[in-house]
Image (cartoon, rainbow, N blue to C red; front, side, top):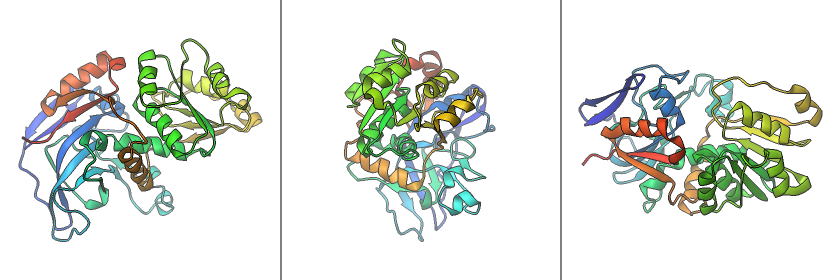
Length: 341
């Protein structure tokens, strides 16, 4: 079988190796596809602060169970599954209260440990989530980013809330859809690219406004009126979007940081204090978020038609990163179709 290995910035080795043998308590997965996300691009470019080479990338996964060990009872060959890629200690305080997404020893398969850019992978079933048998692999590969979105919404007081989401890329789009599906009163999605906002409207997002033409504060007031935004979720993660979120916040707003910030930003502490603005960090997901993401995708409450804009084979990994580096505005979600044969 083949697998892809990041060995240095800009370098991918395609390795021939045997299909893994599984232990009695493991499952053999046939990987169907993997999604390419921003962290993969950082890894490829040598700009990811928390990974080391070599590593097999890939943490957004659709797969089929190929074989099960003798001690595995919950899965069987032919099951369609996705993988929750977090590796956690189970012993630190966050883990003991169910917040293993912020485990003090957290690692992620595909970033800090080998991931799923391989035709077959042996894995313990505790990492797996069963998907409906009629759920197509394009939706299954989007479960991981959809779980990020569900987790971001759940970090805030979202039910019955007015929610503004900054950034209409994959995560921001999914956050706005999740907010609508999970009980927000109204959602607003902003971006500076009309193409991203046009696609968001096709996904059924209620309100989409271009903040190249108006400020975030004006967009919020135009959409929600004097109530403004109960919750602002930053999925763009730039110093400018953080400043805009803080400027647009009203007394008692919540600001959820879910985008992947690459640099420190200045923090206007008096504004946060005097307005009692709640600044909330968000990291990945817990198991319940994955289950909810699968449900929302399977029921069509999160719409993904047209979400995958580029498809590549495993051997075309370099081409995927070339497109993402040179023309990111043309990519919503790129997927590598890995399946052997």
